[in-house]
Amino acid sequence: MAIEVQYIKITDFMNTYFKPGQAPARNTVINMIERKEIPGKRFGKVYYINRHEWEKRLDAETENDIDPLVKMVMNG
Image 1 (cartoon, rainbow, N blue to C red):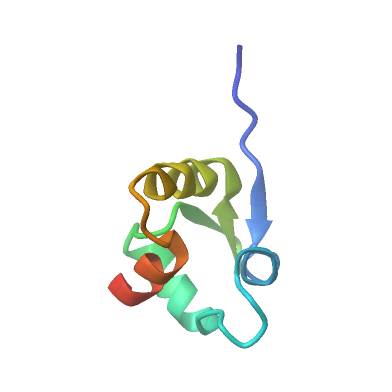
Image 2 (image 1 turned 180 degrees about the vertical axis):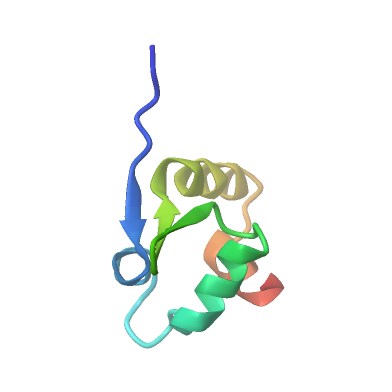
């Protein structure tokens, strides 16, 4: 069974996973992708987040009872 990889644009990522006004800056997210802190890729000039891998990380962090979004931003 193949796993479908679904990439979402950075803006969609920030709108989906963060409350308004609490998302990191676009450049911060790009830097986190380039440093492999967030699963993502650059296609041409546009950066995308691997939604499947991101949600796996969220699930793992949630099991540890830590707010994963706060942890990702603070560690970035």
